[in-house]
Image 1 (tube, rainbow, N blue to C red):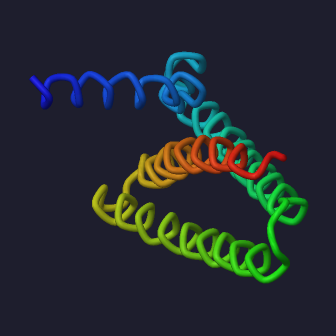
Image 2: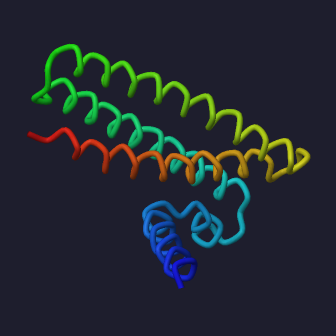
Image 3: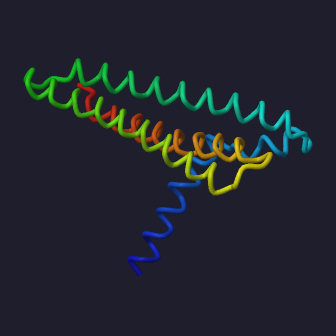
Length: 136
């Protein structure tokens, strides 16, 4: 019973943020034109990266204004910055893996962009939710 409940919760969680970012809509919206689909994915990837940056800046701002002792604030701020650097390295490596697994071809670059959009969606949600921890 616990496994079923956990599975349902995971499904609802992932379907929730998937609705915010749907890189696969680019295919449907562009009537099969590969160039148009690629341009759509590039725009979505740029927007997803900007949203992650925005969420990261928000959490840094909230940590900086957090009602904690200065040493604790500094330690948490340092940790979130390191976390963001590690995320960016992970995203690059994971999406490079996706790119290489496609074995080149016309859709390899699109696969890399879809990967970035999906990972950024998850990172954005996480940072946004965690930034609420630091509201006075």
